[in-house]
Length: 119
Image (cartoon, rainbow, N blue to C red; front, side, top):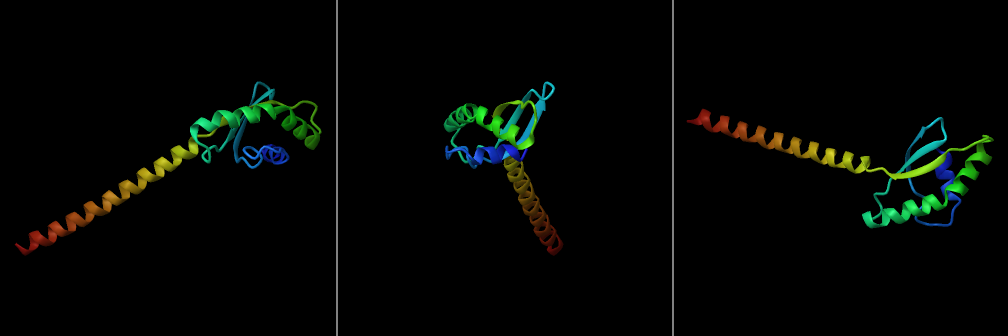
């Protein structure tokens, strides 16, 4: 997985030369590989351009991987925007909201008990 970011760093396109790669999934007997990248720094409308630039660079990336590994064949890369990071952030926000509501409810019950005991 570390070879793909190294290969991207050699490219001149600033959109992709420091793009974080979050995962690689080889399939079809390692003839194809899905490469997941973190596109959270881009607007949704820019993602298509990033994928297009990555697809155009596929040959150069494959050449880099082949020369670095000595492999006979390299998979064809398909680039996919990894949205799991955004989903993870949304889940973390939800957990924070639940925790805040628990604290508020706990404080409310404590105040209720104090008021009830005074009556």
